[in-house]
Length: 163
Image 1 (cartoon, rainbow, N blue to C red):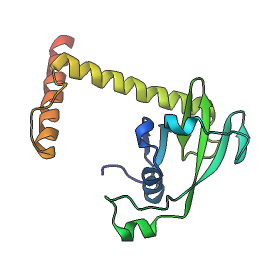
Image 2 (image 1 turned 180 degrees about the horizontal axis):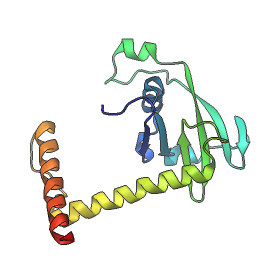
Image 3 (image 1 turned 120 degrees about the vertical axis):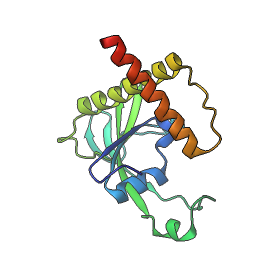
């Protein structure tokens, strides 16, 4: 991956699994994800280490069963538990590895997550404008090239519009 130690990965609720969180922590990459809807129903802000109103640190234990896609060695080397922060913001609960509430207050998390949403809207606009909702290539490598060609075309069109 192109992510490096010190980067922050923003994502939606599908990325908040123990495995993604543990991998990012191991690599020194912080994350901010929307909490999966299923976990949201079980969130109890009275538990864990209280950081503020609807803001706390919790421990997530490693799942007992190894997923099929992961090697036994990799699974064995995962930590027994990880510590993450859960923060309620309006109708969303965010999970993050940015665990220091004094360095990263809830308003900063809110702004960061909102920027992710704007990127998503921009990408959707580009996809719709260029008619690239469905990629036609058959391999991941060619799909990546197809995306780069679309982005090149989009930028060329925007340059012409600006001129």
